Image 1: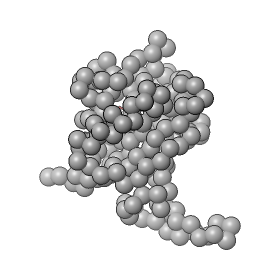
Image 2: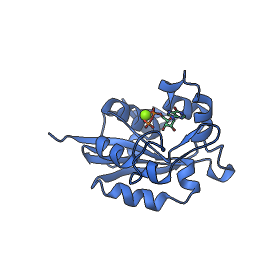
Image 3: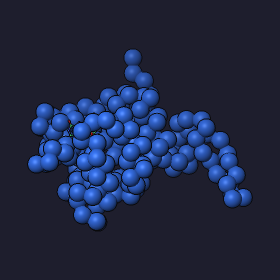
Image 4: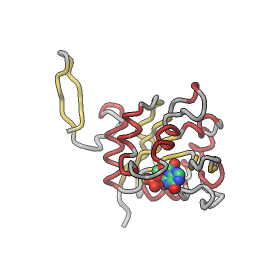
Length: 171
Ligand code: IDP
Ligand code: MG
């Protein structure tokens, strides 16, 4: 049975630097999913750490933080393009088009297989991030997006008053 899902995609700094945004969006459109949110973000160290917290004990963690912050690709590329895709089996469909984590193992018809590389320092520059299960997708979408930045009501939200201004936040 297919289920309606949402998933977070990040076009990482190497994807932006290599001018791959168009190719990646075209490739992802094969999924027949819909874009429900999109923005360019400068990634702080805190956001990078939070996003990859499960990998904090890995030997490549510090390099991974440097990579996702764009600090390997020059000042102009200290950014990522964050997207929320929604639709049937969104998580699996995007992961299939993304390909294996290690770009050398990834099928060459996938985004990572076609465009990724391993640097001499051992960083997997694999062009995009894609959530791997519904729990991870929820955590990541709530981390990268505010409720009003997504065109659907994906998760419960509430109104908070901050500095006399009403604001929607994730519950
Ligand atoms: P995923 O991105 O396919 O979900 P994860 O295991 O969640 O893979 O790892 C997150 C990111 O950390 C990868 O996309 C890649 O950039 C980096 N990474 C994962 N494993 C390695 C490794 O063994 N060496 C170097 N970098 C890695
Ligand atoms: Mg992962």
